[in-house]
Image (cartoon, rainbow, N blue to C red):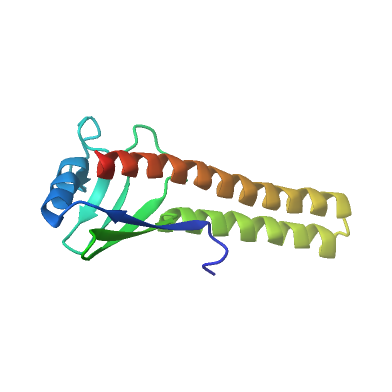
Length: 157
């Protein structure tokens, strides 16, 4: 089912040492505190968690957006620098929402076509299914580009 959901991958080579990288992560990633979520802190670009081997973050938002990617990053230290492998994907709730509406509109399409032989209504329902998927994929791409710019800002300072 992974092929159904939009995703993106990217690999970057950073010329930072580990201490510099961890300082940047500490400065720009606000740890998730479910008790009190303060979105007003200006220094933090991302919300999430990080460790010595990687991170799991998302862009800090003021307004909710279902299409913002969840970014998983893994670090590998090498002679030339730190290799960061990034994977962008939907949040689990967004995956469930997209799957729900896709299945629902396909079932409605089948209902109209098979049970009632209402081809027009079936075609309209199928069109809603396709349009919903395309809009979801394109909005995800837009949010991935925004997240990449902010990651570049965080890591490239």
